[in-house]
Image (tube, rainbow, N blue to C red):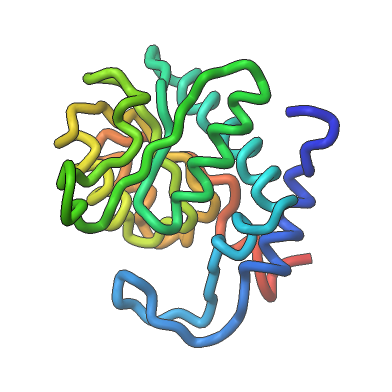
Length: 194
């Protein structure tokens, strides 16, 4: 990280202000919650993107240090992971590392290559890659993205997460062979915050 990179505390402040709300919602998993987190609001803010990119890149380095593998690309499920992958790729580049981004479509492209992944010309076949995710609840969408990544001939080695909802999704990823590390837990936000 450079001296102009927003601190973890500042990132938490941005997430609290821009992305976190206490209101009733139905999550992608189908479960009801009174806590809503839309990390895209922070990821699309200039300071938020800078902070997320650098802090997620830090998580990737931590994931790599716990294994004998090095990722050659970073990506995740569109649309939530698109700005995260780009910000993380730029943060890595600012520190002298070539770590291109890739995007995982929810549906295959309807024309041309008809592939699920975008950015494959930047990634050698069989490469180790990392996934980024905004919020982990059950881990279902991340596992789906990891499946598409594996089908494309890449090896996902872990997941860098912004917020863990603390309802078992991180464990589910680990059971699938994906080491997952979150920057924050949902319990760090809201009424208990302060």
